[in-house]
Length: 234
Image (cartoon, rainbow, N blue to C red):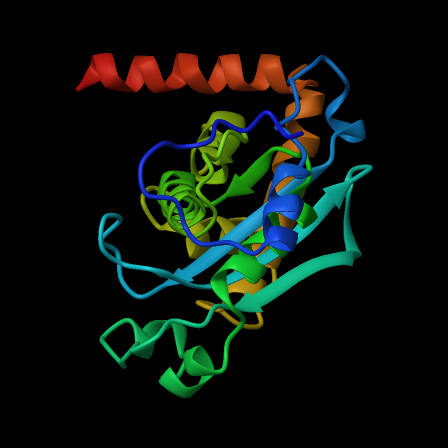
């Protein structure tokens, strides 16, 4: 049985088959000192109904896999979630997901089970990861009654750590992709944003290895140190 922490209180209604799938989900991997080149990462992007992490909902999930220091295009995930009563809003102009697509989307329980099966025990990467982490955690709690325990790594924090002299400032994902000359075919689409984030992460992980940051505990230690330094400088 999975060692996810099950939540008390009102639990979502799941079928027997869904409970079995939930209970078989892999637990988050214990971070070890394996080289980054041998680490499997899932690169995630979410499109949501808005930016309120307490009220808004996950509308679509896009993810790709980095494995053996390359993007494995045979391992991709894309899903639009069904949200009853969803209506067009200002966010629709950004992500372009029409209400009829949401109405015809996949049941959230099935979508989230499939996604967590895809993730397995791998750590997750995202650009501005706190938002994706909190939105995914709330979706899992509401739909599956489970707590997200996987490690999230923020590519937006990783980039300036690895490339401190880059003149990107607060330009975000677009700024970093331009800095490295990456070709962006589409933006504000979960799968497309996950792919470009994976391309950026691949460059950064390669540079991290060259700088001697060749395993996740070491890399996360440096990220935490930089975070503390920034907090003290404010």
